[in-house]
Image 1 (cartoon, helix red, strand yellow):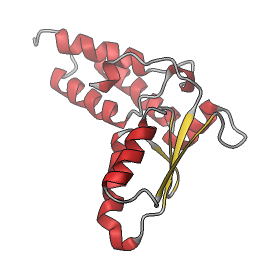
Image 2 (image 1 turned 60 degrees about the vertical axis):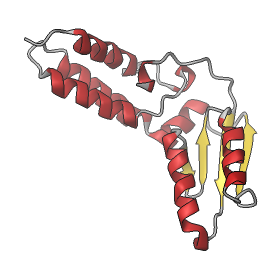
Image 3 (image 1 turned 120 degrees about the vertical axis):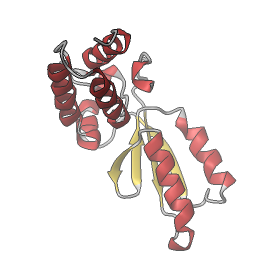
Image 4 (image 1 turned 90 degrees about the horizontal axis):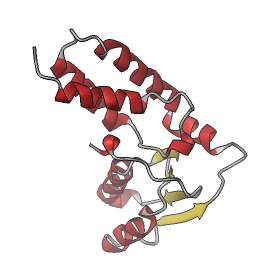
Length: 161
């Protein structure tokens, strides 16, 4: 589960990928969009996606070459996007505060020792799939994801009653 892996310190650099893949290559466009979602990119605009993980630049460029799309896909690295802070951008693109509330609700519900263990595991896995796994520098100070992750680990290790 990616959520359980420790986050590396963020370099402060964003990768932006913009694409304009023609309609007659819709299948390739859908595959590319699925790749971006799988890698937890956030949609800044319809065909402009962003991630704090610049290591995807070469993957994106190779994917474009492999499918003959290099003239339709652009990547760039930047330290800033617009006139908002990185944390504000993360909130705008991934709605971090809503996810944080879901983690808080998970903690409240599954901290109860009588809570259904199976539901606790499946609920956390659903949240982990939704979580963009952002570096700590982009998360609010009161981020509940780590506490929810520890609770999940506890639930997994707990013997069923």
